[in-house]
Structure formats: structure tokens, C-alpha cells
Length: 171
Image (cartoon, rainbow, N blue to C red; front, side):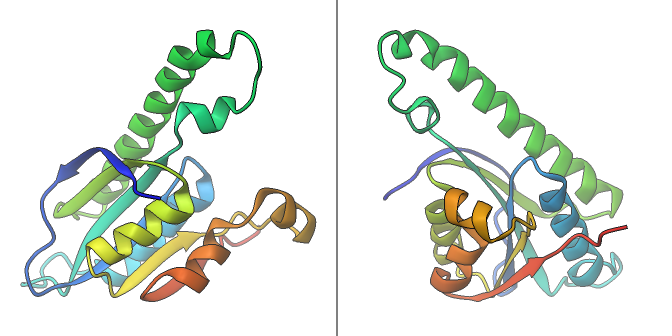
């Protein structure tokens, strides 16, 4: 259950501030949730001191969990899978940085942690003693949720803070 940190960037959350953790993946729902959070909690760049600190967490799956029980030759694809997972994590971090900079939010801690997203996000909430967790909703139907599981549903029931699941409006 323990996760291994793959890396973090940015500054440590300001002492005394309430922490907002945003769980990120590469989906547009996730980026929308980050934008929603910034617009509501970090909209006033002139506010000194800021009321909240922002921690953005991306859970990078382990290559073994992606490859699974692929059978003979699975070990040969591990380096390629690991490389792809690192590239995805780098894209998520870069896009999150860009979104924050566009809104003049610079005091952000970005973490990439290897492990199952459900556990990684809940552990990050505990680690940073977050007051709120914000996540995007993929909008899966009941059948897909049963088959794929819902990270946001798990976090709603297991995170030790308030959880906001943000839905991207349908046009």
C-alpha cells in the first residue's frame, strides 16, 4: 500500500495555510478540475497572504500493474511501458504548471507518486493534512464504474477531508 515518490516539484505548502490537493491524470476532466479549483480558491493574486496552498498529485501506475499477466515476453516490454508512463507523467506536470501560470499561481507543489491512484491520492491528503481534495469526474456510467472502478468514489469514502468531485459541463 505504501507508495514510492517518483518526484516532486515546486515549493512546500505555506505553513498555516489550508491545503487543497488536486488529483490529476491526463484526462480533460482532470484539467478542468484544476482550472475550477484555481478559479475558486486562487483567483485573487493580490491577496496576501494566500489562504490556501496547492498540492497537485499525479499517480503514475507501476509498469507491472499496466502489463499485468501478459505471459512470456512481458519483461521485454517493461522498459517501454515505464518510458511511456514517465512521458505521461511529464505531460501532466507540464500542463498543470501551464494552467497554474496562466492564472498567476506559482506557489504549487507538484508530486508524481508511483502506485494505485486511489491510495496515492488518499495518502497525499493525509501527508499534507489537506482541508479539501478536488478531483475531476470522468462521467462513467454504472457499468463502466463497476468494471473500471471509480477513483473519485473511492476517495469520497476514504479521504480524511472534504472531497469535491468536479464535473465538466456538457456542451
